[in-house]
View 1: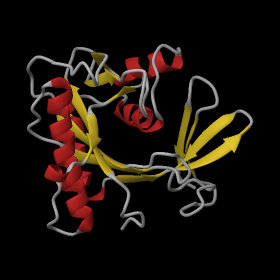
View 2: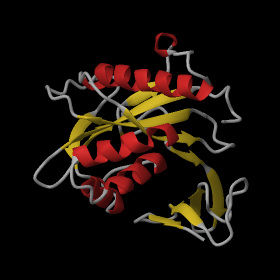
View 3: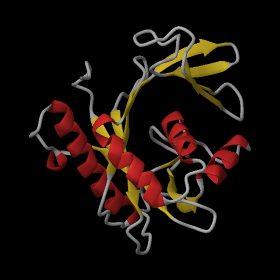
View 4: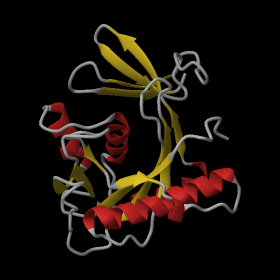
Length: 225
C-alpha cells in the first residue's frame, strides 16, 4: 500500500468513443492558469468530501472516492453523465514538485449527449484519436503532461472501446501504479517509473520504464530486463 496516504486524491476520466478511425478520446484544453495551464487533459479533479468512500480498506476506499470524483467532475466540466468508470492506473507525483496530488485514471465509454464545457474550466473540448493527440503534441501544436501522454500512448492501436474496457476490467484490482521519479540531464527531464533500472525504490537491472521529455517528440521506453 502507498506510503504517502496523506496526499490529496484526484480522479480522471479517460472517455472513449468508437469512430471510423478507431477509438477517440475526449480532450479538454485548460485555461492559461493553474497547475495545467493551457494543457490538454482528460476531465477530472480532486476528491471532495461528498465523494469519499471509507468502506472496503484504504486502497479500495481511495479508488472508489477517486471514481466518484471523476464522475462528478466530468458532469461539472462537460455535462456528461458517465455510467461506467473502470480503474486504469494510479499516479504518484514526484517528491519535489510544489503541488502533490495522487491521481487515479479511469477509462469510461462515452455516454452520449451534447458536450457542455464549463467556461471557467474548459477553453476547448475535442474528440481525438490517441495517435492524433500524440502527433499534435510532437509537432508542438498542443501541450500534454506526462501522465496524459503515457495514457494516450497506451491506447494507440486499440481496436475498439469494448476491447479497452474489457482489458481494464480484468486488471482493475491491480491498476498499474506509476510512482514518478525525475532524472535531470542537460537535454531535459526524464520521468522514471517502476521497473526502470534508475528508479530509486523499484529499479530492475537492465530495465527501462521512462519518458524522455527533453525535446519533441517525447520518447517512451518500457522494456523488461
